[in-house]
Length: 532
Image (cartoon, rainbow, N blue to C red; front, top):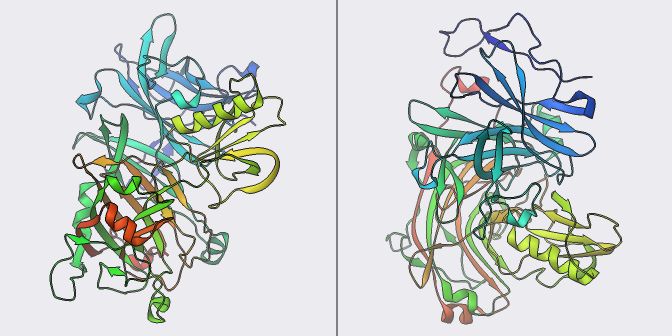
Protein backbone atom coordinates (compact mmCIF):
# COMPACT_ATOMS: atom_id res chain seq x y z
CA UNK A 1 0.00 0.00 0.00
CA UNK A 2 1.22 3.51 -0.83
CA UNK A 3 2.32 5.71 2.04
CA UNK A 4 0.47 9.02 1.78
CA UNK A 5 0.98 12.41 3.42
CA UNK A 6 -1.89 14.07 5.24
CA UNK A 7 -2.18 17.11 7.52
CA UNK A 8 -4.22 18.13 10.54
CA UNK A 9 -4.60 21.43 12.37
CA UNK A 10 -5.50 22.26 16.00
CA UNK A 11 -9.21 22.53 16.64
CA UNK A 12 -8.43 25.44 18.97
CA UNK A 13 -5.24 27.31 18.10
CA UNK A 14 -5.32 29.05 21.50
CA UNK A 15 -5.25 25.77 23.43
CA UNK A 16 -1.70 25.55 24.84
CA UNK A 17 -2.00 21.77 25.21
CA UNK A 18 -3.30 21.22 21.64
CA UNK A 19 -5.57 18.39 22.77
CA UNK A 20 -7.89 18.26 19.74
CA UNK A 21 -7.04 18.14 16.05
CA UNK A 22 -9.05 18.12 12.81
CA UNK A 23 -8.15 16.90 9.34
CA UNK A 24 -7.97 19.52 6.61
CA UNK A 25 -10.02 19.22 3.46
CA UNK A 26 -8.16 17.80 0.51
CA UNK A 27 -6.23 15.04 2.30
CA UNK A 28 -4.10 13.28 1.28
CA UNK A 29 -1.86 16.15 0.24
CA UNK A 30 0.64 13.82 -1.45
CA UNK A 31 -0.65 10.56 -2.91
CA UNK A 32 2.68 8.75 -3.19
CA UNK A 33 6.44 9.24 -3.03
CA UNK A 34 8.60 10.63 -5.82
CA UNK A 35 9.25 8.67 -9.00
CA UNK A 36 6.69 5.90 -8.39
CA UNK A 37 7.76 4.27 -11.63
CA UNK A 38 11.13 3.54 -10.00
CA UNK A 39 9.56 1.71 -7.09
CA UNK A 40 9.27 4.00 -4.07
CA UNK A 41 8.59 1.63 -1.17
CA UNK A 42 8.75 4.03 1.81
CA UNK A 43 7.66 7.64 2.03
CA UNK A 44 7.09 9.29 5.41
CA UNK A 45 8.38 11.45 8.28
CA UNK A 46 8.11 15.07 7.08
CA UNK A 47 10.53 17.65 8.46
CA UNK A 48 9.80 21.17 9.59
CA UNK A 49 8.98 23.44 6.66
CA UNK A 50 11.33 26.25 5.71
CA UNK A 51 10.72 29.24 3.47
CA UNK A 52 12.49 29.85 0.19
CA UNK A 53 13.37 33.37 -1.00
CA UNK A 54 10.25 33.43 -3.21
CA UNK A 55 8.01 32.77 -0.19
CA UNK A 56 7.28 29.12 -1.06
CA UNK A 57 7.44 26.58 1.76
CA UNK A 58 9.70 23.54 1.41
CA UNK A 59 9.59 20.27 3.34
CA UNK A 60 11.75 17.14 3.25
CA UNK A 61 10.53 13.54 3.55
CA UNK A 62 12.34 10.28 4.13
CA UNK A 63 11.99 7.84 1.26
CA UNK A 64 13.50 4.74 -0.30
CA UNK A 65 13.73 3.88 -3.97
CA UNK A 66 14.17 0.36 -5.25
CA UNK A 67 16.36 -1.52 -5.31
CA UNK A 68 18.57 -0.09 -2.55
CA UNK A 69 18.59 3.71 -2.39
CA UNK A 70 17.84 5.77 0.72
CA UNK A 71 16.91 9.34 -0.16
CA UNK A 72 15.53 12.62 1.12
CA UNK A 73 12.76 13.99 -1.12
CA UNK A 74 11.90 17.71 -1.29
CA UNK A 75 8.41 19.09 -1.83
CA UNK A 76 7.26 22.69 -2.27
CA UNK A 77 3.91 24.19 -1.36
CA UNK A 78 2.53 27.75 -1.24
CA UNK A 79 0.30 27.13 1.80
CA UNK A 80 1.32 23.96 3.72
CA UNK A 81 -2.24 22.66 3.27
CA UNK A 82 -2.42 21.98 -0.49
CA UNK A 83 -0.63 21.97 -3.84
CA UNK A 84 2.53 20.06 -2.95
CA UNK A 85 4.94 19.54 -5.87
CA UNK A 86 8.07 17.37 -6.01
CA UNK A 87 11.23 19.55 -6.01
CA UNK A 88 13.97 16.93 -6.31
CA UNK A 89 16.16 14.82 -4.04
CA UNK A 90 18.18 16.56 -1.35
CA UNK A 91 20.59 13.62 -1.05
CA UNK A 92 20.68 9.86 -1.66
CA UNK A 93 22.93 6.89 -0.89
CA UNK A 94 23.06 3.14 -1.53
CA UNK A 95 25.36 2.28 1.41
CA UNK A 96 22.68 1.81 4.08
CA UNK A 97 21.80 -1.80 4.91
CA UNK A 98 18.12 -0.81 5.10
CA UNK A 99 17.61 1.63 2.20
CA UNK A 100 15.61 4.24 4.09
CA UNK A 101 16.28 7.53 5.87
CA UNK A 102 13.76 7.63 8.71
CA UNK A 103 12.83 10.73 10.70
CA UNK A 104 15.00 13.20 8.75
CA UNK A 105 15.69 16.68 10.06
CA UNK A 106 17.36 19.36 7.96
CA UNK A 107 18.36 22.66 9.49
CA UNK A 108 20.85 25.51 9.35
CA UNK A 109 23.73 25.31 11.81
CA UNK A 110 24.54 28.94 11.05
CA UNK A 111 21.38 29.95 12.94
CA UNK A 112 22.90 28.99 16.29
CA UNK A 113 26.65 29.16 15.62
CA UNK A 114 28.59 31.91 13.93
CA UNK A 115 31.68 29.68 13.86
CA UNK A 116 30.54 27.60 10.89
CA UNK A 117 29.99 30.32 8.30
CA UNK A 118 27.01 30.75 5.96
CA UNK A 119 24.99 27.97 4.36
CA UNK A 120 26.32 25.26 6.70
CA UNK A 121 23.54 22.76 7.31
CA UNK A 122 23.00 19.58 9.28
CA UNK A 123 21.09 16.54 8.11
CA UNK A 124 19.88 14.22 10.85
CA UNK A 125 18.62 10.76 9.85
CA UNK A 126 17.57 7.58 11.66
CA UNK A 127 19.04 4.30 10.37
CA UNK A 128 16.58 1.40 10.42
CA UNK A 129 19.33 -1.25 10.57
CA UNK A 130 21.52 -0.04 13.44
CA UNK A 131 18.54 1.69 15.11
CA UNK A 132 20.65 4.77 15.68
CA UNK A 133 20.56 8.40 14.58
CA UNK A 134 23.31 10.30 12.73
CA UNK A 135 24.24 13.92 12.10
CA UNK A 136 25.85 14.83 8.78
CA UNK A 137 27.33 18.31 8.39
CA UNK A 138 27.49 19.87 4.95
CA UNK A 139 26.72 22.72 2.61
CA UNK A 140 23.32 23.66 1.26
CA UNK A 141 23.62 24.27 -2.48
CA UNK A 142 20.83 25.85 -4.53
CA UNK A 143 20.87 26.54 -8.25
CA UNK A 144 18.28 26.63 -10.99
CA UNK A 145 19.47 23.51 -12.79
CA UNK A 146 19.82 21.09 -9.88
CA UNK A 147 17.47 22.55 -7.29
CA UNK A 148 18.50 22.25 -3.65
CA UNK A 149 21.10 19.65 -2.70
CA UNK A 150 23.02 18.76 0.44
CA UNK A 151 26.75 18.22 -0.03
CA UNK A 152 28.56 16.57 2.85
CA UNK A 153 31.76 18.28 3.91
CA UNK A 154 34.81 16.12 4.37
CA UNK A 155 37.87 15.88 6.54
CA UNK A 156 41.41 16.43 5.21
CA UNK A 157 40.56 19.76 3.64
CA UNK A 158 38.26 18.37 0.94
CA UNK A 159 35.60 20.94 0.08
CA UNK A 160 32.76 18.62 -0.93
CA UNK A 161 32.21 14.88 -0.95
CA UNK A 162 31.34 13.02 -4.12
CA UNK A 163 28.10 11.05 -4.15
CA UNK A 164 28.34 8.03 -1.82
CA UNK A 165 31.87 8.72 -0.56
CA UNK A 166 33.75 6.27 1.64
CA UNK A 167 32.33 6.69 5.15
CA UNK A 168 35.70 7.56 6.64
CA UNK A 169 35.62 10.83 4.68
CA UNK A 170 32.18 11.85 5.90
CA UNK A 171 31.76 14.42 8.63
CA UNK A 172 29.17 12.17 10.29
CA UNK A 173 28.57 11.54 13.98
CA UNK A 174 26.18 9.55 16.09
CA UNK A 175 23.51 11.68 17.73
CA UNK A 176 23.56 9.35 20.74
CA UNK A 177 25.49 6.15 21.46
CA UNK A 178 22.67 4.36 23.24
CA UNK A 179 19.08 3.23 23.08
CA UNK A 180 18.00 6.34 21.24
CA UNK A 181 16.02 6.55 18.01
CA UNK A 182 13.59 8.59 15.90
CA UNK A 183 14.80 11.90 17.31
CA UNK A 184 13.63 15.27 16.07
CA UNK A 185 14.57 18.90 16.48
CA UNK A 186 12.63 22.14 16.55
CA UNK A 187 13.57 25.80 16.49
CA UNK A 188 12.81 27.63 19.75
CA UNK A 189 12.21 31.11 18.34
CA UNK A 190 11.78 32.73 21.76
CA UNK A 191 15.21 31.64 22.99
CA UNK A 192 16.87 31.44 19.55
CA UNK A 193 18.03 27.86 19.93
CA UNK A 194 17.49 24.47 18.33
CA UNK A 195 16.22 21.78 20.69
CA UNK A 196 16.63 18.03 20.19
CA UNK A 197 14.87 15.10 21.79
CA UNK A 198 14.52 11.43 21.02
CA UNK A 199 12.88 8.18 21.99
CA UNK A 200 14.54 5.92 24.57
CA UNK A 201 13.18 2.47 23.96
CA UNK A 202 13.14 -0.49 26.31
CA UNK A 203 16.10 -2.88 26.35
CA UNK A 204 14.27 -5.80 27.94
CA UNK A 205 11.16 -7.21 26.23
CA UNK A 206 9.84 -8.59 29.51
CA UNK A 207 9.53 -5.12 30.98
CA UNK A 208 7.15 -3.87 28.31
CA UNK A 209 5.05 -7.03 28.60
CA UNK A 210 4.69 -6.61 32.36
CA UNK A 211 3.94 -2.86 32.32
CA UNK A 212 1.64 -2.61 29.28
CA UNK A 213 3.62 0.39 28.04
CA UNK A 214 7.10 0.92 26.70
CA UNK A 215 9.66 3.61 26.05
CA UNK A 216 10.24 7.12 27.31
CA UNK A 217 10.93 10.53 25.83
CA UNK A 218 14.48 11.73 26.45
CA UNK A 219 15.50 14.86 28.24
CA UNK A 220 15.46 17.80 25.81
CA UNK A 221 18.89 18.86 24.58
CA UNK A 222 20.05 22.14 23.09
CA UNK A 223 22.30 21.96 20.02
CA UNK A 224 25.61 23.76 19.65
CA UNK A 225 28.70 23.53 17.46
CA UNK A 226 32.23 22.52 18.45
CA UNK A 227 34.55 24.25 15.99
CA UNK A 228 37.64 22.28 17.09
CA UNK A 229 36.05 18.87 16.52
CA UNK A 230 33.77 20.15 13.72
CA UNK A 231 30.71 18.48 15.19
CA UNK A 232 27.39 19.28 16.76
CA UNK A 233 27.04 19.18 20.52
CA UNK A 234 23.84 18.34 22.41
CA UNK A 235 23.74 19.37 26.06
CA UNK A 236 20.79 19.15 28.49
CA UNK A 237 18.67 22.29 28.30
CA UNK A 238 19.56 24.78 31.07
CA UNK A 239 16.02 24.66 32.49
CA UNK A 240 16.72 21.18 33.91
CA UNK A 241 18.68 22.78 36.75
CA UNK A 242 15.30 23.91 38.12
CA UNK A 243 14.56 20.27 38.99
CA UNK A 244 17.49 20.04 41.43
CA UNK A 245 16.40 19.46 45.01
CA UNK A 246 18.59 18.58 48.02
CA UNK A 247 22.32 18.08 47.57
CA UNK A 248 23.50 14.51 48.12
CA UNK A 249 27.21 15.01 47.49
CA UNK A 250 29.44 13.27 50.02
CA UNK A 251 32.44 14.66 51.90
CA UNK A 252 35.62 12.85 52.92
CA UNK A 253 35.74 11.11 56.32
CA UNK A 254 37.54 14.15 57.76
CA UNK A 255 34.72 16.42 56.58
CA UNK A 256 36.61 18.03 53.72
CA UNK A 257 35.34 18.23 50.17
CA UNK A 258 36.01 15.51 47.61
CA UNK A 259 37.17 18.21 45.20
CA UNK A 260 40.82 17.68 44.32
CA UNK A 261 40.91 14.06 45.48
CA UNK A 262 43.61 12.00 43.74
CA UNK A 263 42.06 8.67 42.70
CA UNK A 264 43.78 5.35 43.33
CA UNK A 265 43.59 2.62 40.65
CA UNK A 266 44.29 -0.14 43.20
CA UNK A 267 41.39 -2.63 42.79
CA UNK A 268 41.58 -3.51 46.51
CA UNK A 269 41.00 0.09 47.61
CA UNK A 270 37.65 1.11 49.09
CA UNK A 271 35.18 2.73 46.68
CA UNK A 272 35.20 6.51 46.44
CA UNK A 273 31.54 7.23 47.11
CA UNK A 274 30.42 10.63 45.86
CA UNK A 275 26.77 10.55 46.99
CA UNK A 276 25.21 10.08 50.41
CA UNK A 277 21.87 8.67 49.34
CA UNK A 278 21.17 4.97 48.79
CA UNK A 279 17.50 5.48 47.92
CA UNK A 280 16.01 2.93 45.54
CA UNK A 281 14.38 3.88 42.22
CA UNK A 282 16.85 6.79 42.03
CA UNK A 283 16.11 10.13 40.42
CA UNK A 284 19.40 12.01 40.60
CA UNK A 285 21.82 14.26 38.71
CA UNK A 286 25.60 14.09 39.11
CA UNK A 287 28.20 16.44 37.63
CA UNK A 288 31.84 15.35 38.00
CA UNK A 289 35.03 16.83 36.58
CA UNK A 290 38.28 14.90 36.27
CA UNK A 291 41.83 15.98 35.45
CA UNK A 292 43.64 13.17 33.59
CA UNK A 293 47.40 13.05 33.04
CA UNK A 294 48.28 12.46 29.38
CA UNK A 295 51.34 10.49 30.43
CA UNK A 296 49.09 7.68 31.70
CA UNK A 297 48.42 6.57 28.15
CA UNK A 298 52.10 5.94 27.47
CA UNK A 299 52.60 3.74 30.53
CA UNK A 300 51.77 0.47 28.75
CA UNK A 301 48.29 -0.17 30.13
CA UNK A 302 46.08 -2.41 28.01
CA UNK A 303 42.97 -0.59 29.26
CA UNK A 304 42.16 2.49 31.35
CA UNK A 305 38.66 3.26 32.70
CA UNK A 306 37.73 6.69 34.11
CA UNK A 307 34.22 7.76 35.07
CA UNK A 308 31.32 7.18 37.44
CA UNK A 309 29.73 4.06 38.82
CA UNK A 310 25.98 4.64 38.91
CA UNK A 311 22.95 2.67 40.06
CA UNK A 312 24.97 0.62 42.55
CA UNK A 313 23.01 -2.41 43.74
CA UNK A 314 22.08 -1.53 47.31
CA UNK A 315 21.73 -5.15 48.42
CA UNK A 316 25.12 -6.03 46.98
CA UNK A 317 26.75 -3.03 48.66
CA UNK A 318 25.21 -4.06 51.99
CA UNK A 319 26.67 -7.55 51.47
CA UNK A 320 30.13 -6.11 50.86
CA UNK A 321 30.15 -6.15 47.05
CA UNK A 322 30.20 -2.61 45.64
CA UNK A 323 30.97 -3.69 42.08
CA UNK A 324 27.39 -4.41 40.92
CA UNK A 325 26.84 -1.16 39.03
CA UNK A 326 26.64 0.46 35.63
CA UNK A 327 29.74 2.39 34.56
CA UNK A 328 29.38 5.70 32.73
CA UNK A 329 32.65 7.05 31.44
CA UNK A 330 35.62 6.83 29.12
CA UNK A 331 37.55 3.65 28.30
CA UNK A 332 40.79 3.51 26.33
CA UNK A 333 41.61 -0.04 25.27
CA UNK A 334 43.88 -1.93 22.91
CA UNK A 335 41.43 -4.85 22.64
CA UNK A 336 40.89 -5.81 19.01
CA UNK A 337 43.83 -3.75 17.77
CA UNK A 338 45.27 -6.78 15.97
CA UNK A 339 42.82 -8.17 13.37
CA UNK A 340 41.49 -11.62 14.25
CA UNK A 341 40.70 -14.28 11.67
CA UNK A 342 37.44 -16.25 11.61
CA UNK A 343 35.60 -14.00 14.04
CA UNK A 344 32.92 -11.37 13.42
CA UNK A 345 31.87 -8.47 15.58
CA UNK A 346 28.12 -8.75 16.12
CA UNK A 347 26.38 -5.42 16.47
CA UNK A 348 24.76 -2.49 14.71
CA UNK A 349 25.89 -2.35 11.09
CA UNK A 350 25.63 1.13 9.60
CA UNK A 351 27.67 0.75 6.39
CA UNK A 352 28.55 -2.03 3.95
CA UNK A 353 30.62 -1.46 0.87
CA UNK A 354 33.59 -2.13 -1.35
CA UNK A 355 37.14 -1.07 -0.53
CA UNK A 356 40.21 -0.72 -2.70
CA UNK A 357 43.05 -3.24 -2.71
CA UNK A 358 44.81 -5.61 -5.10
CA UNK A 359 44.73 -8.46 -2.60
CA UNK A 360 42.40 -9.59 0.16
CA UNK A 361 44.99 -8.50 2.71
CA UNK A 362 45.08 -5.02 1.14
CA UNK A 363 41.30 -4.79 1.27
CA UNK A 364 41.23 -5.90 4.92
CA UNK A 365 43.71 -3.13 5.69
CA UNK A 366 41.56 -0.62 3.81
CA UNK A 367 38.45 -1.72 5.73
CA UNK A 368 40.29 -1.30 9.04
CA UNK A 369 41.48 2.15 7.94
CA UNK A 370 37.93 3.22 7.10
CA UNK A 371 36.87 2.29 10.62
CA UNK A 372 39.70 4.30 12.14
CA UNK A 373 38.80 7.40 10.09
CA UNK A 374 35.05 7.22 10.71
CA UNK A 375 34.10 8.50 14.15
CA UNK A 376 30.95 6.34 14.15
CA UNK A 377 32.95 3.11 13.93
CA UNK A 378 33.68 1.03 17.05
CA UNK A 379 34.37 -2.26 15.22
CA UNK A 380 34.78 -3.61 11.68
CA UNK A 381 34.42 -6.99 10.01
CA UNK A 382 35.52 -8.13 6.56
CA UNK A 383 33.83 -11.04 4.76
CA UNK A 384 36.62 -12.78 2.87
CA UNK A 385 34.16 -14.91 0.86
CA UNK A 386 31.87 -12.07 -0.30
CA UNK A 387 31.82 -11.23 -4.01
CA UNK A 388 30.80 -7.63 -3.36
CA UNK A 389 30.63 -5.19 -0.43
CA UNK A 390 32.82 -7.25 1.92
CA UNK A 391 33.60 -4.42 4.37
CA UNK A 392 31.14 -4.01 7.25
CA UNK A 393 31.38 -1.14 9.75
CA UNK A 394 29.70 -1.30 13.17
CA UNK A 395 28.54 1.57 15.36
CA UNK A 396 27.68 -0.79 18.23
CA UNK A 397 28.68 -4.26 19.34
CA UNK A 398 26.63 -6.85 21.16
CA UNK A 399 29.31 -7.71 23.75
CA UNK A 400 32.93 -6.98 24.56
CA UNK A 401 34.15 -9.87 22.41
CA UNK A 402 33.61 -11.02 18.82
CA UNK A 403 31.84 -14.25 17.83
CA UNK A 404 33.46 -17.15 15.99
CA UNK A 405 32.54 -17.02 12.31
CA UNK A 406 34.40 -18.71 9.46
CA UNK A 407 35.38 -16.53 6.55
CA UNK A 408 35.50 -13.27 8.48
CA UNK A 409 38.32 -11.05 9.74
CA UNK A 410 37.54 -8.44 12.38
CA UNK A 411 39.07 -5.75 14.57
CA UNK A 412 38.57 -2.50 16.44
CA UNK A 413 40.31 0.90 16.40
CA UNK A 414 43.26 0.78 18.80
CA UNK A 415 43.88 3.19 21.67
CA UNK A 416 40.96 5.42 20.71
CA UNK A 417 38.87 6.63 23.65
CA UNK A 418 35.30 5.39 23.73
CA UNK A 419 32.55 6.84 25.87
CA UNK A 420 29.39 5.16 26.97
CA UNK A 421 27.47 3.16 29.51
CA UNK A 422 28.84 -0.28 30.39
CA UNK A 423 26.19 -2.60 31.82
CA UNK A 424 27.95 -5.98 31.97
CA UNK A 425 28.10 -5.87 35.82
CA UNK A 426 25.01 -3.73 36.44
CA UNK A 427 22.72 -6.50 37.69
CA UNK A 428 20.17 -5.61 35.02
CA UNK A 429 17.66 -8.24 33.95
CA UNK A 430 17.64 -6.69 30.49
CA UNK A 431 20.35 -6.52 27.83
CA UNK A 432 23.88 -6.21 29.21
CA UNK A 433 25.77 -5.09 26.09
CA UNK A 434 27.61 -1.77 26.42
CA UNK A 435 26.31 1.30 24.64
CA UNK A 436 29.44 3.08 23.44
CA UNK A 437 30.88 5.31 20.76
CA UNK A 438 34.13 6.99 19.77
CA UNK A 439 35.04 10.06 21.79
CA UNK A 440 37.68 12.79 21.85
CA UNK A 441 39.75 14.09 24.72
CA UNK A 442 39.57 17.77 25.62
CA UNK A 443 42.89 19.41 26.46
CA UNK A 444 43.19 21.17 29.81
CA UNK A 445 46.84 22.09 29.28
CA UNK A 446 49.98 20.59 27.75
CA UNK A 447 50.12 17.79 30.32
CA UNK A 448 46.49 17.02 31.13
CA UNK A 449 43.08 16.30 29.69
CA UNK A 450 39.88 17.49 31.31
CA UNK A 451 36.81 15.27 31.48
CA UNK A 452 33.35 16.43 32.52
CA UNK A 453 30.60 13.88 33.07
CA UNK A 454 27.00 14.91 33.68
CA UNK A 455 24.74 11.96 34.42
CA UNK A 456 20.98 11.82 34.96
CA UNK A 457 19.40 8.69 36.43
CA UNK A 458 15.61 8.41 36.27
CA UNK A 459 14.86 4.98 37.71
CA UNK A 460 15.56 2.65 34.77
CA UNK A 461 16.79 5.41 32.41
CA UNK A 462 20.36 6.71 32.34
CA UNK A 463 21.39 9.71 30.22
CA UNK A 464 25.07 10.69 30.35
CA UNK A 465 26.79 13.65 28.70
CA UNK A 466 30.52 14.09 28.22
CA UNK A 467 32.24 17.47 28.05
CA UNK A 468 29.24 19.71 27.60
CA UNK A 469 27.37 17.34 25.31
CA UNK A 470 30.17 16.57 22.83
CA UNK A 471 29.21 12.90 23.24
CA UNK A 472 25.97 11.50 24.65
CA UNK A 473 24.54 8.13 25.67
CA UNK A 474 21.05 7.11 26.77
CA UNK A 475 20.47 3.61 28.06
CA UNK A 476 18.35 1.39 30.31
CA UNK A 477 19.22 -0.60 33.45
CA UNK A 478 16.55 -2.77 35.08
CA UNK A 479 17.66 -3.60 38.60
CA UNK A 480 15.10 -3.39 41.41
CA UNK A 481 17.96 -2.85 43.86
CA UNK A 482 19.54 0.02 41.89
CA UNK A 483 20.23 2.92 44.21
CA UNK A 484 21.28 6.56 44.21
CA UNK A 485 24.79 5.56 45.27
CA UNK A 486 27.43 6.86 42.85
CA UNK A 487 31.18 6.23 42.94
CA UNK A 488 34.21 7.72 41.20
CA UNK A 489 35.93 5.03 39.11
CA UNK A 490 39.54 4.79 37.96
CA UNK A 491 40.88 1.39 36.87
CA UNK A 492 43.90 0.17 34.91
CA UNK A 493 44.67 -3.17 33.29
CA UNK A 494 47.99 -4.53 32.01
CA UNK A 495 50.15 -2.56 34.45
CA UNK A 496 50.32 -2.37 38.23
CA UNK A 497 48.62 0.43 40.19
CA UNK A 498 52.09 1.54 41.26
CA UNK A 499 53.20 1.89 37.63
CA UNK A 500 50.08 3.89 36.82
CA UNK A 501 50.60 6.22 39.79
CA UNK A 502 54.23 6.73 38.78
CA UNK A 503 53.19 7.67 35.24
CA UNK A 504 50.51 10.20 36.10
CA UNK A 505 47.41 11.03 38.08
CA UNK A 506 43.65 11.08 37.76
CA UNK A 507 42.12 13.76 39.98
CA UNK A 508 38.46 14.20 40.88
CA UNK A 509 38.60 17.96 40.37
CA UNK A 510 35.03 18.63 41.48
CA UNK A 511 31.75 16.82 42.00
CA UNK A 512 28.15 17.84 42.69
CA UNK A 513 25.05 15.69 43.08
CA UNK A 514 21.35 16.24 43.72
CA UNK A 515 18.07 14.47 44.05
CA UNK A 516 15.90 15.80 41.21
CA UNK A 517 12.18 16.46 41.14
CA UNK A 518 9.58 15.59 38.55
CA UNK A 519 8.57 17.65 35.53
CA UNK A 520 4.95 16.61 35.96
CA UNK A 521 2.69 19.20 37.56
CA UNK A 522 -0.55 18.63 35.65
CA UNK A 523 -2.11 16.14 35.94
CA UNK A 524 -0.71 14.82 39.24
CA UNK A 525 2.27 12.55 38.96
CA UNK A 526 0.37 9.47 40.18
CA UNK A 527 -1.54 9.43 36.89
CA UNK A 528 1.64 9.06 34.85
CA UNK A 529 3.34 5.72 34.24
CA UNK A 530 6.39 5.00 36.41
CA UNK A 531 9.82 5.62 34.91
CA UNK A 532 11.31 2.32 35.96
